[in-house]
Length: 234
Image (cartoon, rainbow, N blue to C red):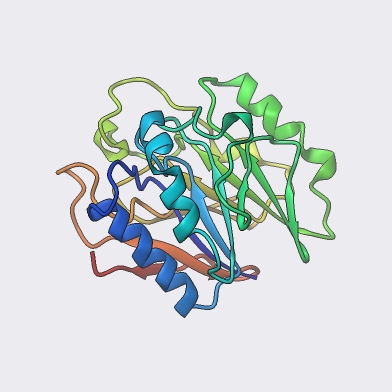
């Protein structure tokens, strides 16, 4: 399975620069012949933006030849409740215990919640018995990796609040091959899990704040191979 992984697009307006970036990513997905397009949280900047853009999102998320998997982030955590429809090719992973299966890949989503410490660890370990070795297990996650030495500005204008923080050690003894993460904006970052898997932040595909400088990118990879940055012309 070939996957395009992005996050933190923070859509606000129809046909603005962020919208055009999303359209470019969809075209890249077609060109790269991906099977799953992943958005690891904060597709929308606010709930009202999700309401205003939902009809238009359905159009650009349809008939692309791949599935689009989304988890809620801290900015759009309420935007997917109540079974709101984003298109027949869109899978909203808002329930940790309800994975999406595609061939030999099982995809889990841990939607953003304002929780910390032991509560997050309990959520992760509730999956342990279901993370069977007959599947490649991928987890979507939106929050902070405490092992990384990031500044507060690397997450956008979020202030001092912690956002569902985890450590690499939280994934010990879990049969997870990839953690496809969001919330960290500044750059593409890869960390190794103790089992040999990967924890990946793709960085935002477009600069959301003035502090986010440098060429943007996404993560495009084949399951079973290392994550790989794909640089964008944005």
